[in-house]
Length: 402
Image (cartoon, rainbow, N blue to C red; front, side):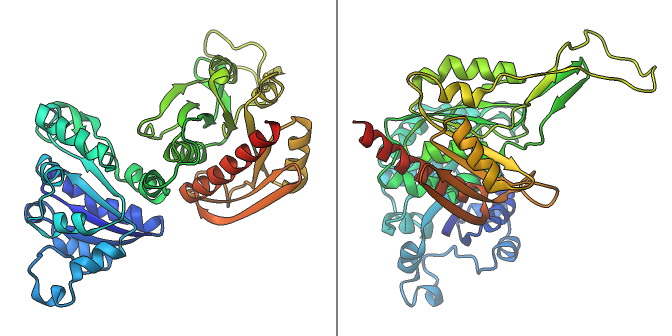
Protein backbone atom coordinates (compact mmCIF):
# COMPACT_ATOMS: atom_id res chain seq x y z
CA UNK A 1 0.00 0.00 0.00
CA UNK A 2 1.22 3.49 -0.87
CA UNK A 3 0.46 5.92 1.95
CA UNK A 4 0.93 9.67 1.74
CA UNK A 5 1.26 10.75 5.37
CA UNK A 6 0.42 14.39 5.95
CA UNK A 7 1.78 15.82 9.20
CA UNK A 8 0.42 19.09 10.56
CA UNK A 9 1.29 21.42 13.43
CA UNK A 10 0.15 19.62 16.58
CA UNK A 11 2.21 18.52 19.56
CA UNK A 12 1.04 15.01 18.67
CA UNK A 13 3.45 15.21 15.71
CA UNK A 14 6.06 13.76 18.05
CA UNK A 15 4.26 10.42 17.61
CA UNK A 16 4.69 10.38 13.83
CA UNK A 17 8.05 8.55 13.65
CA UNK A 18 6.34 5.71 15.54
CA UNK A 19 3.36 5.92 13.18
CA UNK A 20 5.66 5.65 10.16
CA UNK A 21 7.35 2.63 11.71
CA UNK A 22 3.99 0.98 12.35
CA UNK A 23 2.83 1.64 8.79
CA UNK A 24 6.01 0.17 7.38
CA UNK A 25 5.68 -2.87 9.66
CA UNK A 26 2.41 -3.53 7.84
CA UNK A 27 4.25 -3.35 4.52
CA UNK A 28 3.22 0.18 3.55
CA UNK A 29 5.40 2.47 1.45
CA UNK A 30 5.20 5.89 3.15
CA UNK A 31 5.79 9.31 1.61
CA UNK A 32 5.63 12.15 4.13
CA UNK A 33 4.28 15.62 3.37
CA UNK A 34 4.73 18.18 6.15
CA UNK A 35 3.13 21.58 6.68
CA UNK A 36 5.28 24.50 7.80
CA UNK A 37 3.79 24.30 11.30
CA UNK A 38 4.60 20.60 11.59
CA UNK A 39 8.29 21.39 11.17
CA UNK A 40 8.13 23.20 14.52
CA UNK A 41 7.30 19.92 16.30
CA UNK A 42 9.24 17.15 14.53
CA UNK A 43 12.31 17.22 12.31
CA UNK A 44 12.42 16.17 8.68
CA UNK A 45 15.73 14.44 9.45
CA UNK A 46 14.07 12.03 11.88
CA UNK A 47 11.15 11.40 9.55
CA UNK A 48 13.38 10.79 6.54
CA UNK A 49 15.36 8.28 8.58
CA UNK A 50 12.25 6.21 9.46
CA UNK A 51 10.46 6.56 6.12
CA UNK A 52 13.47 6.11 3.85
CA UNK A 53 12.23 8.88 1.55
CA UNK A 54 12.96 12.62 1.21
CA UNK A 55 10.36 14.72 2.99
CA UNK A 56 8.11 16.96 0.89
CA UNK A 57 6.91 20.24 2.35
CA UNK A 58 7.10 23.00 -0.25
CA UNK A 59 4.62 23.28 -3.10
CA UNK A 60 7.08 25.63 -4.83
CA UNK A 61 10.09 23.30 -4.67
CA UNK A 62 11.35 23.84 -8.23
CA UNK A 63 13.35 20.63 -8.41
CA UNK A 64 10.54 18.43 -7.11
CA UNK A 65 7.84 20.19 -9.09
CA UNK A 66 9.70 20.17 -12.39
CA UNK A 67 7.54 17.19 -13.38
CA UNK A 68 4.39 18.22 -11.48
CA UNK A 69 5.41 16.05 -8.56
CA UNK A 70 2.41 16.93 -6.41
CA UNK A 71 0.14 15.46 -9.10
CA UNK A 72 2.33 12.37 -9.26
CA UNK A 73 2.04 12.01 -5.51
CA UNK A 74 -1.72 12.40 -5.70
CA UNK A 75 -1.89 9.57 -8.26
CA UNK A 76 0.67 7.40 -6.44
CA UNK A 77 -1.26 7.30 -3.16
CA UNK A 78 -3.59 4.45 -2.27
CA UNK A 79 -4.53 6.38 0.87
CA UNK A 80 -3.85 9.93 2.03
CA UNK A 81 -3.58 9.95 5.82
CA UNK A 82 -3.28 13.19 7.80
CA UNK A 83 -2.04 12.51 11.32
CA UNK A 84 -2.08 14.53 13.41
CA UNK A 85 -4.81 16.66 11.87
CA UNK A 86 -5.28 20.08 13.46
CA UNK A 87 -8.42 22.22 13.56
CA UNK A 88 -6.71 24.41 10.95
CA UNK A 89 -6.17 21.62 8.43
CA UNK A 90 -9.75 20.42 8.94
CA UNK A 91 -10.99 23.93 8.14
CA UNK A 92 -8.84 24.12 5.01
CA UNK A 93 -10.04 20.73 3.77
CA UNK A 94 -13.66 21.64 4.45
CA UNK A 95 -13.25 24.90 2.54
CA UNK A 96 -11.50 23.20 -0.38
CA UNK A 97 -8.44 25.42 0.09
CA UNK A 98 -5.17 24.67 -1.72
CA UNK A 99 -2.74 26.95 0.09
CA UNK A 100 0.13 24.46 0.48
CA UNK A 101 1.40 21.14 -0.81
CA UNK A 102 -0.71 18.98 1.47
CA UNK A 103 -4.06 20.64 0.77
CA UNK A 104 -3.29 20.86 -2.96
CA UNK A 105 -2.51 17.15 -2.99
CA UNK A 106 -5.79 16.38 -1.18
CA UNK A 107 -7.75 18.21 -3.87
CA UNK A 108 -5.84 16.50 -6.66
CA UNK A 109 -6.06 12.92 -5.42
CA UNK A 110 -8.71 10.31 -6.14
CA UNK A 111 -7.47 8.18 -3.26
CA UNK A 112 -9.52 7.94 -0.05
CA UNK A 113 -8.54 10.45 2.65
CA UNK A 114 -8.39 9.77 6.38
CA UNK A 115 -7.58 12.17 9.18
CA UNK A 116 -6.62 11.59 12.82
CA UNK A 117 -7.60 14.76 14.71
CA UNK A 118 -5.42 16.02 17.56
CA UNK A 119 -6.23 19.17 19.54
CA UNK A 120 -7.31 20.52 22.92
CA UNK A 121 -10.65 19.08 24.05
CA UNK A 122 -12.33 22.49 24.06
CA UNK A 123 -11.17 23.09 20.48
CA UNK A 124 -12.48 19.68 19.44
CA UNK A 125 -15.88 20.46 20.98
CA UNK A 126 -16.08 23.87 19.26
CA UNK A 127 -19.12 24.15 16.99
CA UNK A 128 -17.02 25.25 14.00
CA UNK A 129 -14.71 22.24 14.31
CA UNK A 130 -17.66 19.86 14.67
CA UNK A 131 -19.33 21.42 11.64
CA UNK A 132 -16.15 20.86 9.63
CA UNK A 133 -15.96 17.28 10.91
CA UNK A 134 -19.53 16.62 9.77
CA UNK A 135 -18.87 18.21 6.38
CA UNK A 136 -15.72 16.15 5.83
CA UNK A 137 -17.47 12.92 6.84
CA UNK A 138 -20.34 13.68 4.46
CA UNK A 139 -17.76 14.01 1.68
CA UNK A 140 -16.30 10.59 2.49
CA UNK A 141 -13.29 11.58 4.59
CA UNK A 142 -12.67 8.94 7.28
CA UNK A 143 -12.27 10.42 10.78
CA UNK A 144 -10.03 8.29 13.02
CA UNK A 145 -10.69 9.26 16.62
CA UNK A 146 -9.90 11.33 18.49
CA UNK A 147 -9.21 9.49 21.73
CA UNK A 148 -9.95 10.77 25.23
CA UNK A 149 -7.55 11.22 28.13
CA UNK A 150 -4.87 13.51 29.51
CA UNK A 151 -3.52 16.08 27.06
CA UNK A 152 -0.23 17.93 26.64
CA UNK A 153 -1.83 21.12 28.00
CA UNK A 154 -2.48 19.35 31.31
CA UNK A 155 -6.23 19.11 30.78
CA UNK A 156 -8.31 15.98 30.21
CA UNK A 157 -10.90 15.26 27.55
CA UNK A 158 -11.51 14.13 23.99
CA UNK A 159 -8.94 15.33 21.48
CA UNK A 160 -5.89 13.07 21.72
CA UNK A 161 -4.62 11.50 18.52
CA UNK A 162 -5.31 7.79 18.34
CA UNK A 163 -2.44 5.45 19.13
CA UNK A 164 -0.13 4.98 16.10
CA UNK A 165 -0.63 1.21 16.18
CA UNK A 166 -4.40 1.60 15.94
CA UNK A 167 -4.15 4.12 13.10
CA UNK A 168 -1.79 1.86 11.16
CA UNK A 169 -4.05 -1.16 11.70
CA UNK A 170 -7.08 0.71 10.31
CA UNK A 171 -5.22 2.13 7.31
CA UNK A 172 -3.29 -0.99 6.38
CA UNK A 173 -6.19 -3.32 7.10
CA UNK A 174 -7.85 -2.04 3.95
CA UNK A 175 -10.59 -0.31 5.92
CA UNK A 176 -10.12 3.13 4.43
CA UNK A 177 -10.14 1.87 0.85
CA UNK A 178 -13.13 -0.36 1.59
CA UNK A 179 -15.10 2.61 2.86
CA UNK A 180 -14.55 4.39 -0.44
CA UNK A 181 -15.82 1.45 -2.48
CA UNK A 182 -18.80 -0.89 -2.39
CA UNK A 183 -19.21 -2.33 1.10
CA UNK A 184 -19.89 -6.05 1.15
CA UNK A 185 -21.62 -6.12 4.55
CA UNK A 186 -23.61 -2.90 4.42
CA UNK A 187 -26.80 -3.28 6.47
CA UNK A 188 -25.61 -6.49 8.16
CA UNK A 189 -24.85 -7.10 11.83
CA UNK A 190 -21.73 -9.09 12.67
CA UNK A 191 -21.15 -10.48 16.15
CA UNK A 192 -17.47 -11.25 16.90
CA UNK A 193 -15.71 -12.75 19.92
CA UNK A 194 -12.05 -12.11 20.69
CA UNK A 195 -9.39 -12.69 23.30
CA UNK A 196 -9.16 -15.26 26.13
CA UNK A 197 -11.43 -15.98 29.07
CA UNK A 198 -10.27 -16.30 32.68
CA UNK A 199 -11.75 -18.94 34.95
CA UNK A 200 -11.05 -18.16 38.63
CA UNK A 201 -9.39 -20.67 40.93
CA UNK A 202 -9.44 -18.18 43.78
CA UNK A 203 -9.47 -14.36 43.94
CA UNK A 204 -5.86 -14.11 42.71
CA UNK A 205 -5.44 -17.10 40.37
CA UNK A 206 -7.19 -18.25 37.23
CA UNK A 207 -7.07 -20.67 34.30
CA UNK A 208 -6.87 -19.08 30.87
CA UNK A 209 -6.08 -19.68 27.23
CA UNK A 210 -3.15 -18.05 25.46
CA UNK A 211 -4.62 -15.31 23.26
CA UNK A 212 -3.76 -11.66 22.61
CA UNK A 213 -7.09 -10.94 20.91
CA UNK A 214 -5.32 -9.36 17.92
CA UNK A 215 -6.95 -11.58 15.31
CA UNK A 216 -10.46 -11.13 16.67
CA UNK A 217 -10.06 -7.37 16.94
CA UNK A 218 -8.71 -7.23 13.38
CA UNK A 219 -11.69 -9.26 12.14
CA UNK A 220 -14.11 -6.92 13.92
CA UNK A 221 -12.45 -3.86 12.39
CA UNK A 222 -12.42 -5.43 8.91
CA UNK A 223 -16.14 -6.25 9.17
CA UNK A 224 -16.89 -2.65 10.18
CA UNK A 225 -14.85 -1.45 7.20
CA UNK A 226 -17.16 -3.44 4.93
CA UNK A 227 -20.15 -1.55 6.27
CA UNK A 228 -21.35 -3.95 8.97
CA UNK A 229 -22.69 -2.98 12.35
CA UNK A 230 -20.23 -4.85 14.57
CA UNK A 231 -20.70 -6.05 18.13
CA UNK A 232 -17.41 -7.25 19.66
CA UNK A 233 -17.55 -9.44 22.77
CA UNK A 234 -14.04 -9.30 24.18
CA UNK A 235 -12.23 -11.21 26.86
CA UNK A 236 -9.45 -9.52 28.88
CA UNK A 237 -6.94 -8.02 26.41
CA UNK A 238 -4.48 -5.13 26.24
CA UNK A 239 -5.82 -3.66 23.02
CA UNK A 240 -7.47 -0.34 22.23
CA UNK A 241 -11.16 -0.50 21.41
CA UNK A 242 -11.68 -0.36 17.62
CA UNK A 243 -13.22 2.95 16.61
CA UNK A 244 -16.95 2.88 15.89
CA UNK A 245 -17.53 -0.64 17.23
CA UNK A 246 -19.70 -1.63 20.19
CA UNK A 247 -17.53 -3.56 22.66
CA UNK A 248 -18.91 -5.78 25.42
CA UNK A 249 -16.38 -7.18 27.92
CA UNK A 250 -16.69 -10.69 29.33
CA UNK A 251 -14.24 -12.15 31.84
CA UNK A 252 -15.26 -15.81 32.01
CA UNK A 253 -16.59 -18.36 29.53
CA UNK A 254 -19.99 -18.20 31.22
CA UNK A 255 -20.07 -14.41 30.96
CA UNK A 256 -19.14 -14.62 27.27
CA UNK A 257 -21.83 -17.26 26.69
CA UNK A 258 -24.46 -15.01 28.25
CA UNK A 259 -23.30 -11.90 26.36
CA UNK A 260 -23.39 -13.76 23.04
CA UNK A 261 -26.86 -15.20 23.56
CA UNK A 262 -28.21 -11.82 24.62
CA UNK A 263 -27.18 -10.33 21.24
CA UNK A 264 -27.09 -13.25 18.79
CA UNK A 265 -30.68 -12.73 17.67
CA UNK A 266 -29.54 -9.42 16.15
CA UNK A 267 -26.68 -11.01 14.18
CA UNK A 268 -26.57 -12.03 10.54
CA UNK A 269 -23.04 -13.40 10.95
CA UNK A 270 -21.31 -14.80 14.06
CA UNK A 271 -17.50 -15.12 14.08
CA UNK A 272 -16.06 -16.90 17.12
CA UNK A 273 -12.41 -15.86 17.27
CA UNK A 274 -12.12 -15.96 21.07
CA UNK A 275 -10.02 -18.60 22.83
CA UNK A 276 -12.66 -19.70 25.34
CA UNK A 277 -11.60 -21.93 28.23
CA UNK A 278 -13.01 -25.40 27.60
CA UNK A 279 -12.93 -26.22 31.32
CA UNK A 280 -13.31 -24.20 34.50
CA UNK A 281 -12.79 -24.96 38.20
CA UNK A 282 -15.90 -26.59 39.64
CA UNK A 283 -15.68 -24.45 42.77
CA UNK A 284 -13.65 -21.25 42.97
CA UNK A 285 -12.31 -20.54 46.45
CA UNK A 286 -13.66 -17.38 48.08
CA UNK A 287 -10.29 -16.60 49.67
CA UNK A 288 -6.73 -17.00 48.43
CA UNK A 289 -5.58 -20.62 48.64
CA UNK A 290 -2.51 -20.80 50.86
CA UNK A 291 0.61 -22.71 49.86
CA UNK A 292 0.56 -25.39 52.57
CA UNK A 293 0.39 -28.83 50.95
CA UNK A 294 3.00 -30.29 48.60
CA UNK A 295 0.36 -30.93 45.93
CA UNK A 296 -3.04 -29.54 45.05
CA UNK A 297 -5.83 -30.86 42.87
CA UNK A 298 -8.50 -28.81 41.13
CA UNK A 299 -11.72 -30.39 39.90
CA UNK A 300 -12.64 -29.00 36.48
CA UNK A 301 -16.02 -28.98 34.78
CA UNK A 302 -16.70 -28.35 31.13
CA UNK A 303 -17.72 -24.86 30.03
CA UNK A 304 -20.80 -24.43 27.88
CA UNK A 305 -19.89 -24.53 24.17
CA UNK A 306 -20.64 -21.08 22.76
CA UNK A 307 -19.91 -21.93 19.14
CA UNK A 308 -21.97 -25.13 19.01
CA UNK A 309 -24.87 -23.50 20.87
CA UNK A 310 -25.08 -20.65 18.34
CA UNK A 311 -24.81 -22.97 15.33
CA UNK A 312 -27.68 -25.11 16.68
CA UNK A 313 -30.13 -22.23 17.10
CA UNK A 314 -33.35 -22.57 15.04
CA UNK A 315 -32.57 -19.31 13.24
CA UNK A 316 -28.79 -19.46 13.50
CA UNK A 317 -26.65 -16.75 11.93
CA UNK A 318 -23.96 -17.63 9.40
CA UNK A 319 -21.57 -19.19 11.92
CA UNK A 320 -17.78 -19.08 11.60
CA UNK A 321 -15.46 -20.84 14.04
CA UNK A 322 -11.73 -20.74 14.65
CA UNK A 323 -9.48 -23.73 15.29
CA UNK A 324 -6.03 -23.17 16.78
CA UNK A 325 -4.16 -26.47 16.62
CA UNK A 326 -0.63 -27.67 17.37
CA UNK A 327 -0.91 -30.66 15.01
CA UNK A 328 -3.19 -32.21 12.34
CA UNK A 329 -4.63 -28.78 11.65
CA UNK A 330 -6.69 -29.80 8.62
CA UNK A 331 -8.11 -32.97 10.20
CA UNK A 332 -9.14 -31.31 13.45
CA UNK A 333 -10.59 -28.28 11.65
CA UNK A 334 -12.73 -30.40 9.31
CA UNK A 335 -13.88 -32.49 12.27
CA UNK A 336 -14.95 -29.36 14.15
CA UNK A 337 -16.69 -27.98 11.06
CA UNK A 338 -18.80 -31.13 10.81
CA UNK A 339 -19.45 -31.92 14.46
CA UNK A 340 -20.54 -28.40 15.36
CA UNK A 341 -22.47 -27.88 12.10
CA UNK A 342 -20.62 -24.67 11.24
CA UNK A 343 -20.85 -22.74 8.00
CA UNK A 344 -17.11 -22.06 7.95
CA UNK A 345 -14.00 -22.64 10.05
CA UNK A 346 -10.68 -20.78 10.06
CA UNK A 347 -7.74 -22.88 11.19
CA UNK A 348 -4.13 -22.14 12.00
CA UNK A 349 -1.18 -23.84 13.63
CA UNK A 350 -0.10 -22.38 16.96
CA UNK A 351 2.97 -22.80 19.13
CA UNK A 352 5.93 -20.94 20.53
CA UNK A 353 7.03 -19.95 17.02
CA UNK A 354 3.70 -19.05 15.40
CA UNK A 355 0.19 -17.82 15.98
CA UNK A 356 0.40 -16.48 19.51
CA UNK A 357 1.21 -12.87 20.47
CA UNK A 358 2.24 -11.95 16.92
CA UNK A 359 1.08 -9.36 14.41
CA UNK A 360 1.08 -11.89 11.55
CA UNK A 361 -0.34 -15.33 10.90
CA UNK A 362 -1.20 -17.89 8.21
CA UNK A 363 -4.60 -19.59 8.07
CA UNK A 364 -6.60 -22.19 6.19
CA UNK A 365 -10.35 -21.70 5.72
CA UNK A 366 -12.77 -24.60 5.21
CA UNK A 367 -16.47 -24.83 4.40
CA UNK A 368 -18.69 -27.56 3.03
CA UNK A 369 -17.23 -28.38 -0.35
CA UNK A 370 -14.49 -25.77 -0.41
CA UNK A 371 -11.32 -24.43 1.13
CA UNK A 372 -8.92 -21.50 0.82
CA UNK A 373 -5.39 -21.08 2.19
CA UNK A 374 -3.95 -17.68 3.10
CA UNK A 375 -0.15 -17.46 3.47
CA UNK A 376 1.72 -15.58 6.20
CA UNK A 377 0.58 -11.96 6.37
CA UNK A 378 -0.26 -9.24 8.86
CA UNK A 379 -3.34 -10.16 10.89
CA UNK A 380 -5.02 -6.97 9.70
CA UNK A 381 -4.52 -8.06 6.08
CA UNK A 382 -5.67 -11.62 6.82
CA UNK A 383 -8.76 -10.22 8.53
CA UNK A 384 -9.57 -8.14 5.45
CA UNK A 385 -9.29 -11.20 3.19
CA UNK A 386 -11.24 -13.41 5.59
CA UNK A 387 -14.10 -10.92 5.84
CA UNK A 388 -14.32 -10.70 2.06
CA UNK A 389 -14.57 -14.50 1.89
CA UNK A 390 -17.12 -14.64 4.72
CA UNK A 391 -19.23 -11.97 3.01
CA UNK A 392 -19.14 -13.84 -0.30
CA UNK A 393 -20.03 -17.20 1.29
CA UNK A 394 -22.79 -15.58 3.36
CA UNK A 395 -24.31 -14.03 0.22
CA UNK A 396 -24.17 -17.31 -1.69
CA UNK A 397 -25.80 -19.27 1.10
CA UNK A 398 -28.46 -16.59 1.65
CA UNK A 399 -29.29 -16.63 -2.07
CA UNK A 400 -29.45 -20.44 -2.04
CA UNK A 401 -31.95 -20.40 0.84
CA UNK A 402 -34.16 -17.83 -0.83
